[in-house]
Image 1 (cartoon, rainbow, N blue to C red):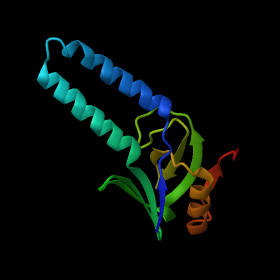
Image 2 (image 1 turned 90 degrees about the vertical axis):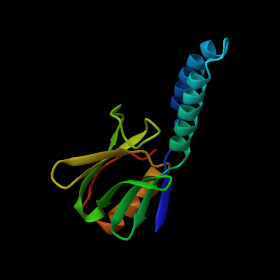
Image 3 (image 1 turned 30 degrees about the vertical axis):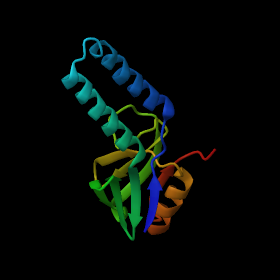
Length: 137
């Protein structure tokens, strides 16, 4: 079993946090405790997402995990292509430096492993038929 943590885009995290903190400032005087509590909960949740997202390769199974939750499981032998993408589509990726995994006939998921080349090497060892569209830096 190999764990690949998600790459974190600190600029994206800063953008989200500025919005959350900025929306909390007007609630401080007079204090609106419910609003402050909700924003604090959302901030903790966002931080949990940014720092607990992992992609786990276990045998021939790829799992996308957020903390203790398994978001998606993919049979590596069903993967057709791994391609670099800068898509802004909502995805289990906390960076804009992303890989799109196309599997089965028309399914796809976008991820952002910190070690993209190591991740790609691992996937291609399990399934050498995967088409790779990636330019290593």
